[in-house]
Image 1 (cartoon, rainbow, N blue to C red):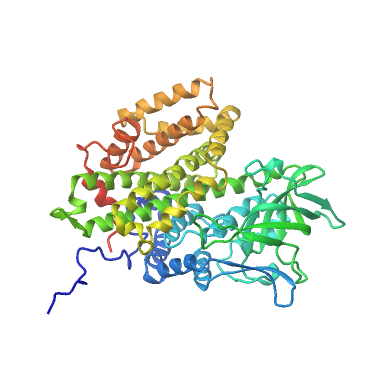
Image 2 (image 1 turned 30 degrees about the vertical axis):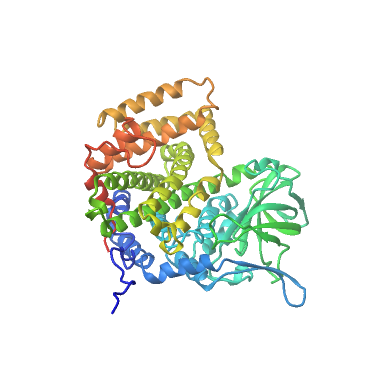
Length: 544
C-alpha cells in the first residue's frame, strides 16, 4: 500500500481555549498598577471572564462569521417604503452584546472605570475589532452630552447600560442604547469647520431641522448620533435620534455602505439629512468645543484598539514559533527569529503600557492629569497607530505562507491595522494638534515633561533622549514641517519612561537600546544581539 500523502506534521495547533487577559503579562501588570487594591479582585475576575470568552473557539468563530457575512443595507421594504435599515449577521450581535454586557460602554461612573474598560476593550478587540466602533462611540459620547445636563440625565443611563437591545425603536423603551457620530463631509474630511450641513431652528426649545450630507457616518444602526451642522451662530453639535419618541423613523437616508479595506463586519455609511429632527447639544457656534472630549476619548480607543491588534498578532507569531520546527529546531529557539519576536514584543508591550497609563489619567481626573492627556493622547494616537501596521505585517511573516491565508486570522488583522491611524484624525492632524497644545497650553507641556522626567537618572539612553527632546522643543523654527519627527520622539520618550519605571529590566533595556539609543536597524529583528531576548519573548508568550 502506498503511504498516505496527507499526514499532517509540524503544524502549530490553533491558539484557542486560553485566557486572553491573564496570558498577557504587560496588561495584567498594568491593571494591578493602576487599580486600587480594594477593587482588584473584582476587576481581575471580570477581565479574566472576558478573556476566557475572547480566547474561546466560539468567540473566534463569531469573529470569522461577522467578517465573512458583512452588513447589508435595506433602503426600502417590499412595498417601496423607505426604511434605511442595516442587517447584520447574528455573530455581530453576539459580539456587540458581549461587549455591552461586559461594561465596555460604562467607564465614566464607576471606580477605576477607564482602566478596567480600556483593559476589557483591549481584550475583547482581539476576538473581533469591527464591532468596537459603536462600542467606542457610545462610550465617548458621554462627556459631550454632559455639556447639557438635561440630555445627559436622559441618555447617559442608556449609554452606560450593560443591556444590549438590537432593533430600531424609540430609545425611551429600550434598556440600553448605542451612539454613533456623523462629523465628516466629502468637501472637508478632518476640517469639520468646512461642514455645510445646515441647521434651522423650529418651535421647540433647542430643536432644529437638519439638511445635508455626511460622507462618513459610522455604525448607522445606532439609536442616536452626534453630528455637526452650521446653525446661525456657527458650527454646532446636535443629537439626531434614529427613531422619534412617537415611533416614527427620523429622516436618516442611508445612501450606501462603504466598501472598505478592512473593518468588514462594521457598517460605515453615507447619509443624507432632509428635514431631519435634531436636538442641540451645547451652545450654538461651539460645536467643536462640545465634542472635543468625545474626540479625545475615541482617540484613546484608537490607541487601545491598535494595542489589541498588535498584541494578538504578536501572540500568534510567538505561538506559531513555539511549535514550528525548521532547520533542526524550534523557530522560537533560533537566534534570528528570537530577535524578530522580541522586537515585536517590545512594540506591543510599549503600546499596552502607554494605553493603560492614559486610561489611568482619565480615572485620576486631576488638573495635572487632564493637562498631561492634552498632549499625551494625540502623541500616543499618532505613534501607536502608526506602528500597528508594520507590527502586524511582520508578525504575519513569522507564520510564512500559513500567515498569508485567511484561516490564520492574520490577514484580517492586517486589513484592520491602518484604520485607527485614520479614524479621528490621521497622522498630520494629530501632529498639528500636539503643536497647538505646545504653543497654547504651557501646562500641558509641563505635565508631559514632568511625566517623562519621573524616570530620569534610571537609564542613560533615556536621559539623552529627554535632553534631545528638550532641544527640539526649544527650537520653533520650521516646527510644522518637522512636527511628525517631534511627536514621534515625544511618544518614544514617554514609552521609554514608562517601561523604565514599570517593565522588567530586560524589556526596558531592549527598548531604550533600540528605540532611544539608536542601536537598531530599520526593520524588526535588528535588536542588539547581546540583550536578553529570550526573556522578552517568553514574557510575551500566550500560554494555552
